[in-house]
Amino acid sequence: MTLNLRVPARPAASHGARAPQYLSPATQSISVSDGTGSPSAFTVGPSAPGCSASGGAVACTFTLTMGLGQRTVTVDARDQPVSGGVAQGTVVSTVTAQLFVYEGQANAFNVVLGGIVADMTLSVGTLLFWDRSSATVSVVAKDPDGYVVAGRYAAPIVVTYTGNNHVVLDSYAPTTLTDSTQVPNVFSPFGETLSGTVTATVTNGGTTVTRSVPLTGTIQSSTFALSNTYNSSGTWYGAVDISTPIDRAGQPNVVIPKQFYGGTSKIEGVAFDASGNVIVANAGSMSVTIHAPGTTFTALPVTSFPLPAGSAAPTAVAVDTTRIYVLTADAIEVLSKSNGSLVATVSGGSTALSGASSLAVDATSIYVVNQTSSSIGVFPLSANGNVAPTVIGGAATGLSAPRGITVDGTSIWVANTGAADVRAFAKSASGNVAPARMLGGAAAGMNTPYALGFDVGGNLYVADAGVNKVLVLPAARQGPPGATQQIAVTGNDVMNGTGMSVWPN
Image (cartoon, rainbow, N blue to C red; front, top):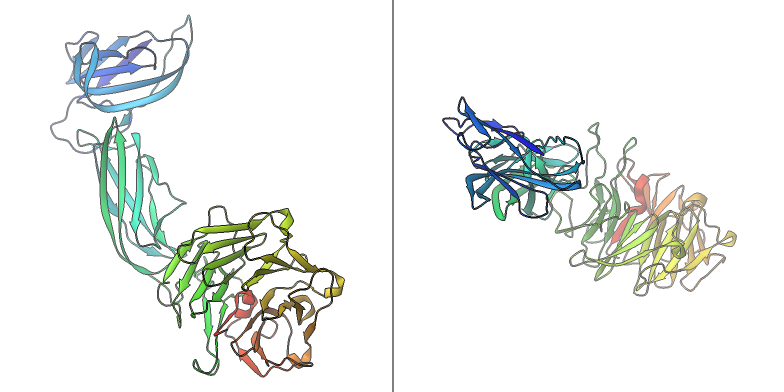
């Protein structure tokens, strides 16, 4: 096989950029290996065998023998001449290529040598905010001669970020860079002041180069700094509405995700814990955030956890003292409340989860309402895997496209959306059974009940999309109830009221 190469003239100063099809002017030897035996080594220079000089550049032609068939060939350019039959010095450009060598014919190959990265400079671009907050990261790689490598790198540059727990490297942009055209990004779904470090690392021939740049500044935020709060037209969506009926001391807080006509809500579940923290399931950023008691969602969450890899978009969330329960259409992801680690996953054909829209928990069980199959599934709190629940469903139940669920000490309460009523079943119920209680009709003011919750006094709160109000039904709930209070909700927020939660509860 014949190897032809040309070493360019060395410039007076090290500057500018060099495309990937180059040999560094520092090249004094070439090493070629096909993985069998010792590499072939050739000295490069004006007076070296097979070489000639012209205008300061050196052109060389070398002949070498290589095995037949598929070969993995590595070509290294080094900055010292051959000694003892071995190319010496530092690798200044290299390539590894898959070649197929045929018998009895001339074999010619084009290979592109990548630039060895000996130094890097990093910078972070202007922080932007639209449907998410992001900043570009510029990585400028230089070869041993000080030239910018404009094109392929001999080894990939890996970019990482450490700092604010809400900032991550953008999964839609490259983080392992193989050439100079690739640009990584950092982004955050929240408005915040940044403090962290972007680091780029590359290893060539056992030598590692690491460079870092601090990420500082402020990512702009909206009033509701949650989960992609703008759509492409600039319309608000995915925010959260805090309603404080009467006064904070005398009445609970009610939290409902917003949804606007023409938009898609990115917040699909909210829940108060016993301390008044607000847990939010964010479908836009595929995360769970925990917000301090009394929040108006203008401050950063106390904690943020990404949903487990491979999770579907959440539809609801519930919480107890130690765990967060995230519902998707066909699974329940149980996370540690302290660190977001995955504790259990309930999924599979035996679970009977079908268009699951809401869930509730108590000290012993997980309760899920399935909108598609018009049924209720009750799982033990310790459920994990493809677990069969106790199912409440069938014609006798009267369930019709139910959307919301909550529990009290003895009963499972369901927002029976399709029939415009609320139905209660004993916690011990199973199968095709009639409800123990039914609430609804004109006296209750119900039209399209979506979500339910109890306050600490036992009053039942019903988020109704048809009247865009939260109806408060008395604790006794005897006879055909009338709402003792109707809380008007701004906008059309109850359209996504499956996430309503009440506190204290």
